[in-house]
Image (cartoon, rainbow, N blue to C red; front, side, top):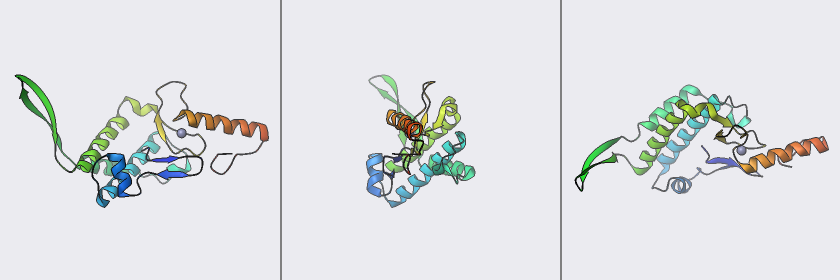
Length: 175
Ligand SMILES: [Zn+2]
């Protein structure tokens, strides 16, 4: 979900090319994988948007049914199962799976997403409302308001600027 992010000048997307996806995953990937991962990311951001009642412009046009179907499609993209083995006289567990490395990564991310969106952390999920930010984060501390320290600094600076100049900062919230 954090492969879309913003800095001072604009919103960046790390998954626009197959090379970008390979860098992100650390395994081989092709055009089909890129399309599939972009669809999964869209679904995860839609679900986070629904859960956090995100009112940011970047979170508009979300579709809950489409997102759920996409996560389930991704979760099925590779099967995995536990395998029992005997090593040095001890019983040990291995995790076996089938499918391409990219499919296994996609299934694994989808499974983690199901855990996140249905587990205890789901009520702690937040959209970051710092100027221009597009990220979500888990509020793991009662006073945590932003996804990162730099977003906190930027939000405080924007507030300070507005208070002192009676004006709004630049178009992306940056002065
Ligand atoms: Zn942020």
